[in-house]
Length: 242
Image 1: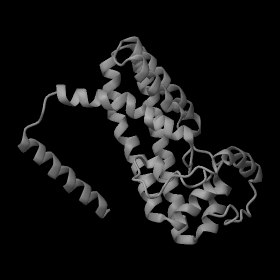
Image 2: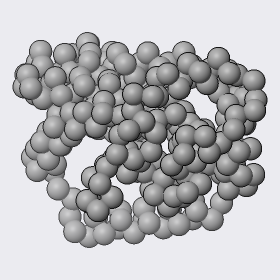
Image 3: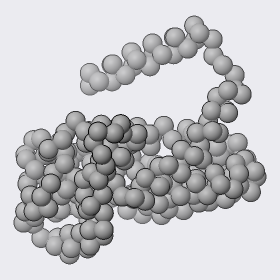
Image 4: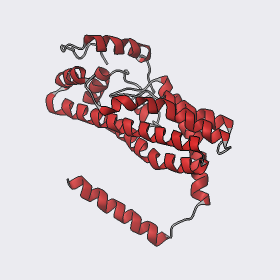
């Protein structure tokens, strides 16, 4: 993919220059397209980090990028009840604070995902160049979640500390959980090596615990599970009509 494929003719050049300096170390990150992908971040790992490249990648590979960003935001939403359950399992005041920060961080990521979606729709509706100009011109626009990004960085390490202190999870998995804070944040961000480390750490920390909670907890009857599944599918379909 050419780096000069989009010309940025709007004014926030200082923002663009600053972000491109950060993006440059990751421009050579690639994955083998013949190998099965395993995470939403890995799906877009072949594309450069900063938003012009993410928009260009969507223009060239809309299905791949839609799958990547959709899987990421779905995972973010599903993590919310998981974090509430983990906070309750730990059961300390520190865990309550950490859980609140973590969930606030997840809400912030969900807000960013909404902006990502709109930007991709602009590519479809007005073209790559116009969409890139619109994003660049509004990148530093005010929104309330500017003031909550700290929660993304602080919530996970504090939750990991609380989990380790109560022996809810061991030292290695606590460190893995804390590494989730390394996942890049913001609008239209690509995948970096830190992204892969953070996602892997989250899986190492939570998958065994989640399986244990599912196996040890009460199991719904087959009839109830079928009813809940049918209700969820029906509501999902009705939601899609709007």
